[in-house]
Image (cartoon, rainbow, N blue to C red; front, side, top):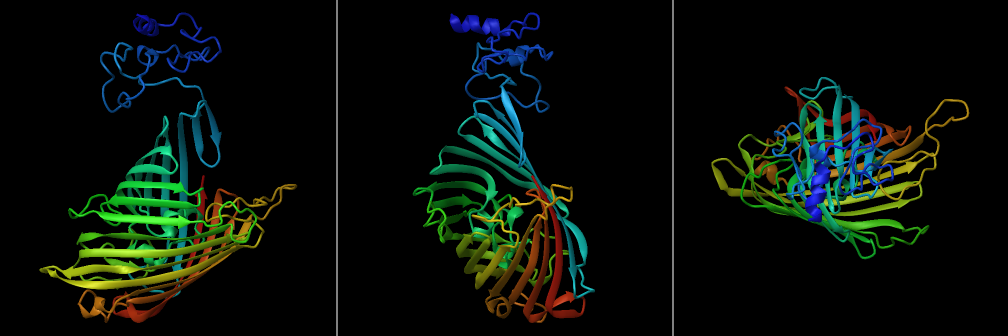
Length: 484
């Protein structure tokens, strides 16, 4: 009887401007059955005055007609819009959160604008160019505990696509479930390091050409052993940066990162990280990427990255793939040192004889360092907050944070790539040595400038324009980045 009477009262149009079924505290509602805000002119409606249920939800506006009949306490149907008291804050990003922390919504933006110029002029199809490698719009939040979500859209170079879309179920930080399209747990530099906080502007040769990037699947992840160990295990399609699988088999990817001295504050090894990752599965698709390049991720445009190996058009990824990676990262005061060794194999075959597979070994490593000249300290790779943000106004003068960076990178594919006819040895190389030297300038925690010189050497002269080959490549990259 109480439930029936309550439902009837909730559906009555509120009288005057007193907020209807208010609770007398000025909020215009109890938080369970939301009411209008006093003095705001919001008198409510039958839909948003109905008592919501504990789960479910009406269709979003614009996708379907309004519910008919309107939601009512007589049924276990929620309101289309709850009036939940909340709070708003900025930095980084925008956040709207309910007072009880059950709901929150965040928006973040990443904008990167590059200039890439090459000492070896006259290249084709690669050219000197201004470019927008990443423009991301990121939306995240929680729809009551323990259900979180993350959705991001990307405009990268000349493509627009869905980057991430996943649901997180987080009852316990030791075991969380992620469902959807997400960052694959393979390599420390990809899974742990955020792209907006990288030391060098682009990731390594191994990841850019053989990492999985995003993929669809289900992942278990968490933090255990007194927060010393982060782990992630995923079952997914296995298509590099793809949306649909090309065969029935699924890949397994896993990563573990151990901080053995975590919690030992102000010690030399407090921020030491060691660990590894692996991905394994069976493939049946055209090579992705078809062309291996020096400084662009899997989805990169051919105008951007210098090619050093192109698989022949009759080649397919066919058969087993198993890649593994070991990493170590150490952060101490202004210094960051990171190294990874990636190795493994992938099977390839030619169209018309897919049963005759070539077992192609892959081996790579890199070592990189970053050091803040202006005194900022770090515990990991990420956004830095300058001690003195850049400002020319009297009394607020500052130069921002300046970081000196360097990286040495090696990638080698087995000679089978040529002997089995997967690529032309007269046009391409199977080994690359690459050196980066740069200077990063964080004007504020939101604005960052990269300056990077990248020198690459190939074990065979590679095609860089019709009828022309080069043994080295030199690129100057300047990047302006905005992240909030």
